[in-house]
Image (cartoon, rainbow, N blue to C red; front, side, top):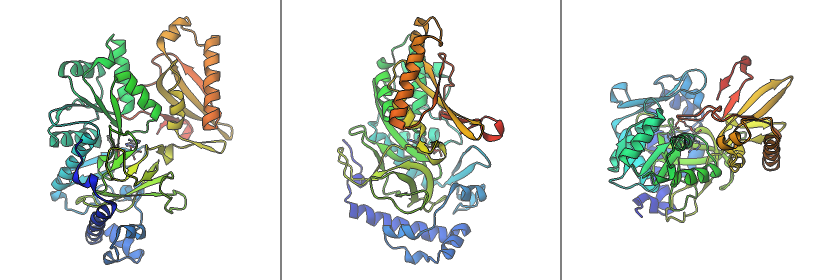
Length: 443
Ligand code: DLL
């Protein structure tokens, strides 16, 4: 096993590096980004006050709205001519959020991804079938440069055209596959339809992320594809993919690149830190970035962290799987639930395919939530292609009972015919909210 030097550091060594990075970032944003100069002046903070990692807690937060308000380049710390590249995320409403990279930023991002691919089981000489979207989205190009840095050869196939992807996987025999977990299900399902065995490909490791997915989904994917599936986390505001990567050895939380970022977990209501091991909102501060340094960015993602050494030997901070985004949390008659928690229980029903959607409607003054699930094709055929049969009702009852017992919410279950729930080629749409102006609004 190859461990990067910083992955073996004692906590005191990591914190020393982090303190230096923090001082650099605070000085940079104070001198170069008027928004941060104002924010720090208003908080009565002089960059020289920031000496230790703990001092990060004195700094003001940054939120997505700050990026939108300074669209497109208002929070950049370098002149446009010093940029190498920009990326953007579309979001669901309003202006996209734009992020920028200098040549050094692109290079340290490539280092991070090279490290992430190693953590996930990749090695020089391997081939990566990279089915993350290329373009403004950071997934495709992010993985691409990191793979090249590790001397892993990349097939830059991007998302979509699944039949062609399957053909290329058969012909080129890659060891690594990167895409969203929902697209990996889609690829496997299509292989089965084409009469091919998804367990018989050359792929050994899956690098899946960019959307929440559950432990049950991991088991299903590992079973379907005969691979090890590891979770990769990141967001464009902080860097892109590679902020954290789960190791294939332990598959027990994602290793955060502590030398590039300080992570905090806060209570999203009080903004106070939560104790290690408890769930809260992830907050990141960048330590090395030049074009788009960022202080205490509130990600909206709910997870927990631990600084306990991993079974794989790495000493970096680890984060749990992301349960979901705060905006995607469903509040059903006072009970909070994330789609990924529903997914966790739904996936164990092998009568159903691993695609689903949660629909929210207005019903008088109340919100009505229904869970759309899809029946497995062979079973559907054996029912004479009917969904109003007794077997279907029994299955619906069982699922309803399971979700009520584990997630403590009651929801209508709508069973759909095979292939009727939209398949994703990138990030899956799990929540469809029909309440906004009576229009379908997809989160
Ligand atoms: O999704 C970057 C990425 C690309 C990560 C490829 C992993 C692989 P954005 O489009 O800016 O960037 O979206 C970031 O996606 O705040 C999370 O809500 C969600 N997300 C990303 N990775 C995971 C993950 C990319 N592993 C937003 N689990 C983040 C759960 C994830 N959610």
